[in-house]
Length: 323
Image (cartoon, rainbow, N blue to C red; front, side):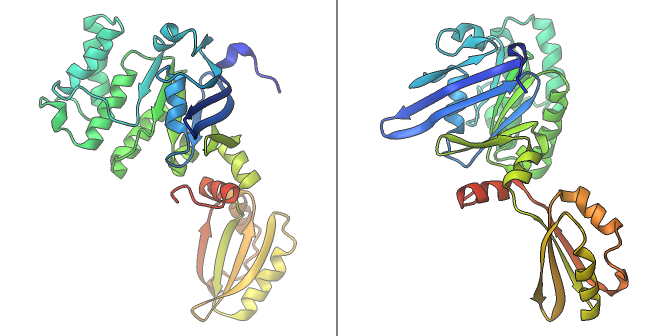
């Protein structure tokens, strides 16, 4: 199905960036729709940061072009920077200013009236749990500085927001806080470009994902599409008290269409059946509802492993995202 030009926030056309022999970005083409959260997923060094630096007009491409909000990154830099917010991978704050001074300074750079800037700053800092801090921002923890950086990118309500590893270095509680805030932003008609190597982050937040490796896009689609097309099967491991019960379950699953295969394995002298199937949690529920286990009392243990974007990357490249 064709996509209307009016609904496209970013169109990337054969974009390249070479540093001598290194092809950091090597012919990337993508269309990103307005209002969606589009993740570029890949390991460190895959070309994510170089790509975002070209889209935000910091770097000039070696070849190719991209339109951001209808403006070329080659000829429309001044128009682009008025409409985008950037939270870079490297924390960028004025460390001799307090939190609210950092945010208000960015607001002033974008011509926001002082009273409006103060009110929006107060609200954003409260949302991120850093309101009321009166010490210099250089004394903040790394996680607090990253949250401050995100606040600075959001203060002028950009139409397109670039997030380059926005939760890097955050503890689990702070990471969840940022994820919840990003989900809220998705309801405000902001186009979000998320650069990440965190497959859970990409899976839980994204409308669409493009996987990048060695400067090239090797796959793209919704998280569900990618997992169904390139991922591994889901796995259900069941250990039984008696061999007869295992045989009954083997007989029952033969008639279930979404079961790919099964095998018997030995787990510390337990009689264990490993069932591979497609369709994720939805089909796991169907599997359990179909009563393929006659006597649940005879089950000693049960484990479920769901297909993930990590499996997708592994199957496409032969290595894990963090290798």
